[in-house]
Length: 231
Image (cartoon, rainbow, N blue to C red; front, side, top):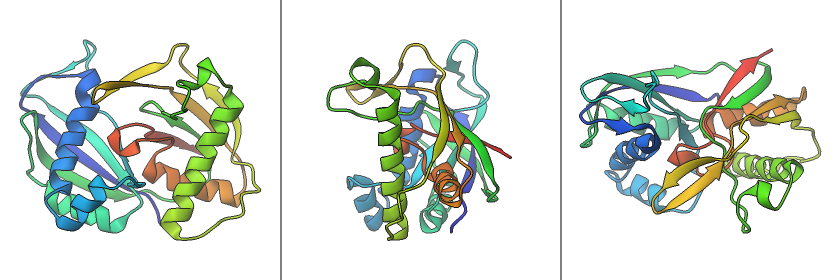
């Protein structure tokens, strides 16, 4: 089983960026390099799992505005070694109107027994009838998150795992109100969630995979990036 790869990207801001615009600006930077190659341009435009995710700029600004002429970092994670190599080679010294890449540091995340995970960026699960709390319950949310993860895992490894296993033992929603994220002309509603991970091999394999791909939907747009606590 592949280990998640983490890229720590240091950037210099050429303009102020509001917190709510950060994901869109990081997307702009990543998308710019993906469309430089014919194969990755197809990959970028396809409606398929991208198997990478990213977080926000750090350090966080108290006034929710990242400052022009300052240096920040963000992380990209993936499970795809070829994609990682391409991003490293093409993202060096790349820039947009808002930010310029200074350095990229790569590390392989070790596979250890995971006790729990928590979302750094909101987890979004899209239901036809809207935000899940308005029409459903946490059990259905968990079911969709689980199905999405297993589908990603099966597709990436070209397998079909036995789905009769416990994945999470406890789920806790950390926000009282949904967290809004702007995407193009719509607003997506998501949640910051903590998960206790089950103590079985299949659950551990799936969650180690999820560290590199994100949880929920639209991970390549900056949603569902998770951190973890080892046992």
